[in-house]
Image 1 (cartoon, one colour):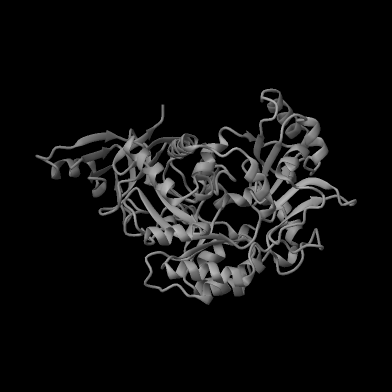
Image 2 (tube, rainbow, N blue to C red):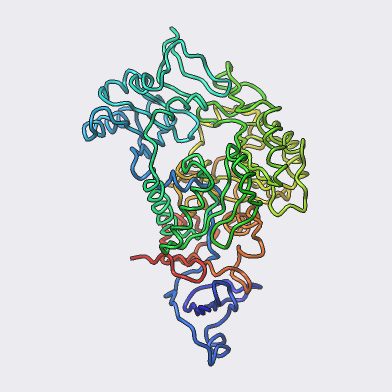
Length: 531
C-alpha cells in the first residue's frame, strides 16, 4: 500500500474548516486537516511526503466533454485559433503549402469567420490560389462545417452534380458551382480519402492530449475518441499500454453509436472498467452547430430565413439508436443544440425510457437553444446537461443575429438549468475550444470574452464561482456516476487534486485568466509538476 501525506496546501476541509494537509492511502483520501494533527495521528506509519508549497488546492478538475485524441492531433495541424481575417488565414495556408511536399494534404482547424474583419471565409478559388499543388481540408471551429479546395473535391469524387446528403450539404454559389463549403455528413467522402493515422500516431496523439490536460490541472476527462481510434478494442489497448508506461490519467469513455455492434459482441456493461478507464454513454448527434447554421431550429434562422438547419437523423432513426443502446442497458449522450433538435432528442429519450436504477444517466449535450417547456422536460427525464461555458465567449455577440431576439430567454441558459434542478457537467469540447478549465470557469462567471469589460452577454445567466467550479467537480462526477468517488476533498474520495498558484474568488474573476497550475495529482501520484 502506498501512503502519502500532502502538506502546505490551502485546502477547504469541509464545513468551513480550513486545512493544510491531506493523507491518502492507495489513491484514496483517508484524512484532511491541519498538518500537525495528521502527523500525530500517523505516528508509527510509513508514508511519503509531498509539499504543495503554499498552493491553493482544488478537488481534481475534470472536463466532461473533450475529444482527447483530436486534441493531441491538433498539435500537428494548421491551427487558425485567434486569427482575425481571411487574409491571415490564407497566408498561413500558403506558408504551410510551401513547407509541405506537393500532393500531401494540408489539414487545418478552428477558424471562425464571424471573428474576421470583414466576416468572410475563403472560397474555393482563394484556397486553390493559396495551395495550388495540395488538397486542402479545413475544419471550422464548430466541427460541423468545413472548407475544401478543388483538389480536395477532386480526390473526394465530389462534383457539381453530386447530390447533397440527407444529413449534409455542399455549398454552392448563385450559379450552382461549388464554393468550397461542406456541411455535416457531406464531409464523409473527404474523410475517406485522407491519410488514416496509424496505431503509433493514435497512441502519440492520446499521449500528447493527456500531457496537455495534466499541465492545465485536469485529472480526468470524459472523451469520445472512437471516430478517430476506430474501434473499442483499439481504444482499450491504447489506454492500457499508456497506463503500463506510467501515464497517470483517468478517462470516462463515451462510445459513438456506430460501435453498438462491437459493444454487444464484447458484452461490456455501462460503467464497467476500473479507476483509470470506464465506459460511459452511447454518443450520437441530432443536429449541427449554430455557427454553420446547421443546428436545427423550430423556426428559420433570423439572419438566413431560407434554412432551419440540418437534422442528422429522422425521429425514427433517433428512436432506433436509443432503443439499440437501451437493449444493451446503456444511457445515451445526445448532441442537441437547436430547439427543434432538443425536442427530437427528448422524444427519443422518452420513446424507450432509461431505468432510473441505471448506473449512469442520459446526457443532453450542449443545450444551447431551449425554452421553458424543454427545460421542464429535461428535468422530468432526470438527465445531465453537458454544457460548455466557453461557447459563450466564442459565440457572442454574433449568435444573437443568428437566432434573433425571440429565442434569447433560454439561450446558453446555464443558470436556469441549475435553478430547475438539472445537474450540469462542464466541458470545453476541445479541440473546438481551448482545453483549459480556467477559461471555462471565466466564461461561466463573466459571460464575456477575456479582455472585455461589459456586464456579460445575457448576464442573468452568470454563475457564481462555486456553481462554476461545481461544473468541473461535482457535475462531471455525477455525469460519470462517480459522485461517491470524486468532486470534493474529503475522506473516501479519490486523491485527485489541482494545485494552483493563487486564490480565486467571486470578486476577482479576471484572476482565473492568470492562474498557473503548480501541480496535478492523480490517484495520489504527482502526474504533473510545473517546471
